[in-house]
Length: 152
Image 1 (tube, rainbow, N blue to C red):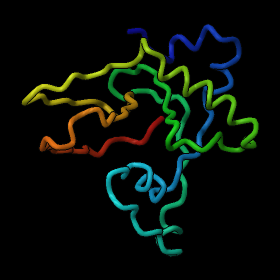
Image 2 (cartoon, rainbow, N blue to C red):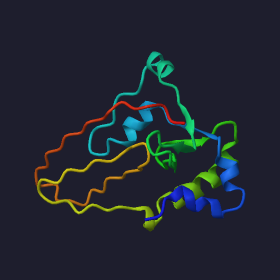
Image 3 (spheres, helix red, strand yellow):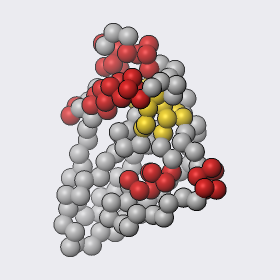
């Protein structure tokens, strides 16, 4: 598997365009609504809560703090657009980056077995759970999130 960011250098001007650029991420309430397909939608945020949780900006390209490798830091479910760029200009670039980051050569598909344990690094991984299992079978899961550094 070849790193997705390194292949982007073959496309003229794209690395220069997205290097140092920032994206607008969605507010936490949108994240909660989009990530809770099986649960009732959470209550909308109050104006006070909304004021405390505005959309955030983050770099398009994130440098891993341990390895120094660069990775695209985009997600079709949560990235709204480029900061300071009109939506009609942002959208085609984002759609290209989304298609690029989900190419078959960058995907790992896990086939679950009893007692499997999976770890991934959210600083350089986009994950998407498929509901391709038998819902009548009980599943037992634990999730741990470790606080990390700010993307740069």
